[in-house]
Image (cartoon, rainbow, N blue to C red; front, side, top):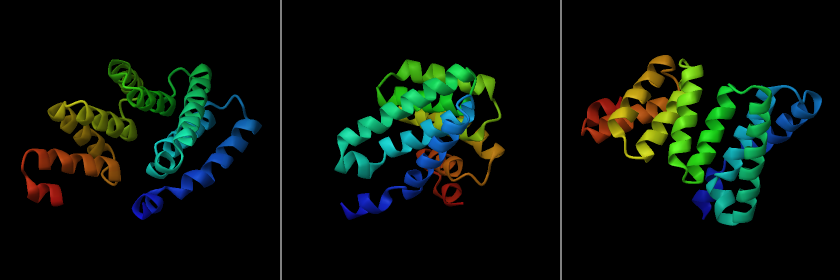
Length: 168
């Protein structure tokens, strides 16, 4: 229980009101809506929120969905909103829908390292390890300092039994 409490990303609690105020000041700014969606998604999938308040988690995920939809109404190709919507589809076990959303986001934004890392995580989740490794390596080449892409490349090495490169 203590581990879960300490793992909650407190910064998301601080960011949400900031994004809300931007959305109120500039309701036609898609990136503010997609940021709000991303932060709400982080709150809704937090182990602490799910552990302590499952109803609260559902609330955050619904807020995320609504904010992502608003962002996509303003900008149908908004990369962050597409990625969050794909993550929400995964959360709902809508695997094919999630795959289509990730592919759409990456077709529109092929150089999006964060989107590539999210897609690699999805591919690992659904059992496509070799494809996931390729996508993770692309993300890593674009942003070698990203903890997500570094972690996903290391997972790829571990899956092949290559401990040395995984540790690097």
